[in-house]
Image (spheres, rainbow, N blue to C red):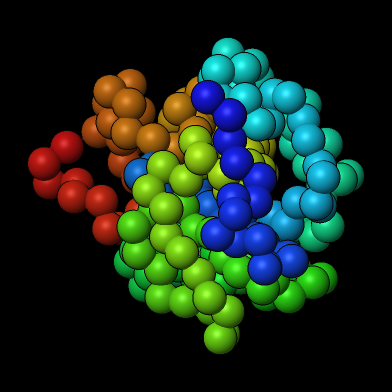
Length: 197
């Protein structure tokens, strides 16, 4: 299965930005949003091929996307903002912040997921599992995930007991066991239902 670049129904839109975020399901660390506008005619076999990307490490694509994109941006919403606004709103904020940083204003937004509040007056379409369908969303997904993974690996140096280098802040059994033993850090989210875990 091949991901799409610009389907016929979007042919009139010149700059299409794929948008995605990473970290919404974690119990520690930030939510990271990303937006990517790929150039017309751009093609990379791994990025566009679902099967190849499923079996390949996308780390090498992180730099390739940044080098070849018409415009790209990454934005982070930290644990304090997540605690203040809640995960759904923080996820929207991460994408909005990423869009604010684009050097080119998109003419259309393709957003991974089922809901999006909109951005300025730019038309948008929400696409469940969009990273498996559109290359620009896949590119945004890769940027957001790898940026967040690297951030959690840096935090791991200050909090090695929590295993963030491996679990990236997600609620693995080992991670939850360490929390029971040592308690929460300032990077753990208050929105997580701690009483049941």
